[in-house]
Length: 329
Ligand SMILES: NC(=O)C1=CN([C@@H]2O[C@H](COP(=O)(O)OP(=O)(O)OC[C@H]3O[C@@H](n4cnc5c(N)ncnc54)[C@H](OP(=O)(O)O)[C@@H]3O)[C@@H](O)[C@H]2O)C=CC1
Ligand SMILES: O=C(CO)COP(=O)(O)O
Image (cartoon, rainbow, N blue to C red; front, side):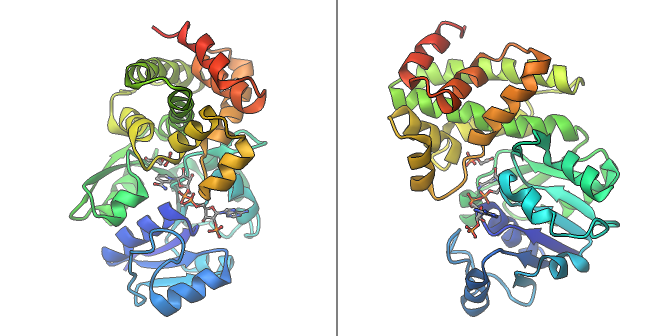
């Protein structure tokens, strides 16, 4: 039996625990709050995220002791928001992940360090990239809870790792495919959140579907330019790990990034939008990271720049969307 350590207690971790445990894997599940662990042990449900999902406690072992949770695992899956991944993982000994395969389900970068999660893990735990992977693709946790047909892509420079993790995920409603482009997939997952957030801002200001379609088309070009500058490779951006994820985040009712952007466009401050959401919109942090990385690369990125100016320089969303609209084709 495969042993998986799941780190994170939010919606995506909850959805992945459902998929993996229903496929027969043992999942040791780290959540940060004792009360949530107690609730899970008592009721078999996560109290705050996807609370309709019921877990088989013969396969799912919720706990708050991080070192214990990872100790016996073959696989460690990271599903805490990017802003908290470093404080969580820094509690582990540097050798704690030595012979383990580490798969990041996080769609964000370490704020402050402006580093991809897999780069941070490789550096901190001295792991070769062949022990690392990412889970990507258009997939909202809420639809997994409803068992709606979904597709995931596992990116890893190690084809066998990607293949094996796909096997752990595949079921009646999840298809999973391997890919080799770890960096491109991870960066794209970060950037699509920025685009969805900006689409939300535009919508909040009053722009409609016609504008959003043009924004998303231009976004594909912006993502292509950035990826070519930071990680040049012949890649097909129309694949679902890239374009699919961009589309679902820009258009889905479940998208936190789009929702957050919408609130900012309607006049909420960043703080009040974050408080009201109660979930994490990674795009807010990603805008700053990508903007700062791009100071060196100098790629033409009008959408990211517009989002940065609204979120970090407090330029009015109306004014910024007026300026952005002149730059789109
Ligand atoms: N939700 C989805 O559909 C998908 C999400 N992802 C990615 O998964 C990652 C995790 O997001 P998701 O599961 O959606 O998160 P949610 O927004 O559902 O939940 C927020 C999570 O952040 C935790 N958290 C809040 N503050 C802290 C803190 N100070 N230290 C540690 N943890 C904290 C919360 O813990 P607590 O409950 O204890 O407050 C909770 O587990 C993100 O990178 C996201 O982009 C990827 C694909 C799909
Ligand atoms: O990555 C996601 C879906 O693929 C989740 O996006 P949101 O965080 O915007 O909900």
